[in-house]
Structures are given as structure tokens and as C-alpha cells.
Image (tube, rainbow, N blue to C red; front, side, top):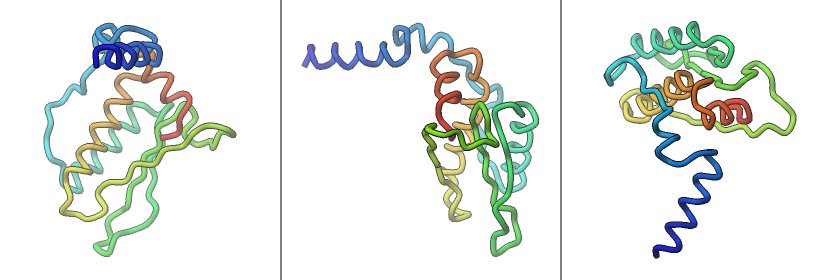
Length: 133
């Protein structure tokens, strides 16, 4: 078991380009405390993140819900408006049902986490530069 753990730790260090502790030391937490977002607060938060990080985000709507609310999409990438040939694309989906708040909150936190750490954390920067999220 110790050999397996050492192998995993070594592989993680290779991916991160540093030790686990060095990696964690460079991460920045979102500045605001955690809160649950209703539709209006979620929309405001997404717009704020898009305005604060316009070079790596694109926010748009793909239509309306049955309650005539915008269905928001946020793209995070070094070129968010471009489908780069050969670049991996990952899609996370949350908030499919209005009462499923955990998925919505996880994605809002992930978006903010990627944005605030872009350019300051090597791993997050590489991830955003090489994956369209």
C-alpha cells in the first residue's frame, strides 16, 4: 500500500509540476463566503465573474426556462469564443431542476475557483489554457 501511495503522490506531483504542499500554497480561495444563490443572485454572480475575467470567460444564454428565465452558459478557456482544434472540451451541467441547489453551487464555486486562480497557479492556468470548460 505504501508503494502504491508513493506512486500516486509522484504522479500527482508530475501533473501539478510541484509538490502537493507547493500547489496548495499557491491556490487562492474565492473572496466571498459561501452562500446559496437564488436565480437572481446566480445571474448577478455569473455576470460579475464574466465582467471581472473577460479574457477567459464567455457568458451567454441558450434560451428560456418554462418560467421565462435565461438558461445561462459560462465558458472558461484562454480563448472562450473559439473551438480550438484538438483542445479537449469538458461540459459540467448543474441547475437542471430549480430545486437542485447543490449542483448549481458547486459549479458557481468551480467557475470562481478557476477564475481567481488563473494566472497565479500553474496547474489551473495550464488547465484553462488547454481545456475548454
